[in-house]
Image (cartoon, rainbow, N blue to C red; front, side, top):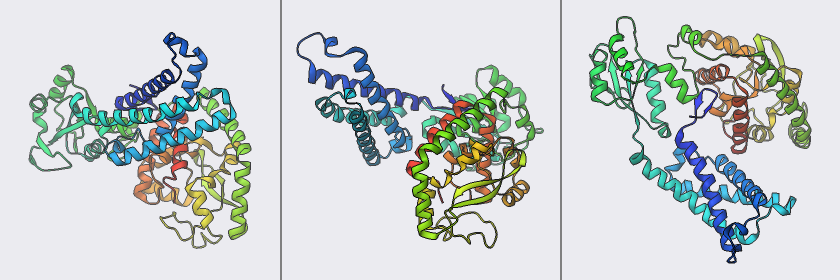
Length: 465
């Protein structure tokens, strides 16, 4: 199974991406044949590598449009009216982008006749395939049956994550109570179905495929011999924190012991990886600043016309190894926004100006941070830098918080694409869980995936306040 960082991409998602590509090509082949076939050999209708290149361009543009329209989100699959609207929008966007390519490079064009024939076919194929997949999934793929041994909070959080992610094709059959005193009690859904001491018999009776340990108290409660027999029988046995990390892309802090972090794989930072990451930061930030000059000029003018100077906002943040630096952003709040001291932004914050609201939603206020990247204060990808005031508070309240300063902070990051803006202690805790996952699985592939997803976040205006 394909992994990005340490998180597996569900096979169902990969199947959907592959099927979309095949169906797009099939629609183009049928349309080209109907339009150009004149009784000659089938292969004479096509112009070899030239046609392949044209088809490839269409597939890439369509796949990107589907991705940026959230059409690989299986929650959307179950909302049929929303699914149809998003498909129309995705393929409409594809047509507009392809028209721009054809205007710049006319020889890429397959012709209006082929486009007119292929567009409704590809739309029908994409819609039909998704409806079929939604209906057939329950019949063709038996969910992997998971038994939670113990009633610890990590197991409960894991179950909630599984229930919210139907594409994982996992089913929690129930929990086992440490003392066998609460059988029948509902924890999430389902509830407690037996005692920890009966794990072997229950696992066999329930035809369990995976066992997850989430004991509130392990000392004297772990049925080691029974778990050993199950392990040798071929049933995977793993810790709730490990399972939660794999499926959610977060390292759950609830009852997380330092030994789990010490003994788990990852957290490698080779000299080559760090040098490559720094080189990418410099190259991309230079190119980004050059391309963004017209946008920066427009944003600066809009801020000046609405609220005057200063255009840029400077604020002390905590960076690599706890060092302080001045972060640069386009000012999105009134000049007296922090007259009463620093505070988190909230939904509908009255300190935010009209221009500020727009540039926050589109993430344009972050562009000047490319200068911070060039100076080495920040990286393109990493945990978001926080103010010293909040860092001191969060270090006292959240375990392992200081570990996020072992890498350079970033303009974007795993937490930014996976979660909303953190404006409370609980939200900061969730963002730290995501940051720890990123640090553990730091890689060039994960950075590229984050940058790719950040574009979607910017286009859809998610998470901004």
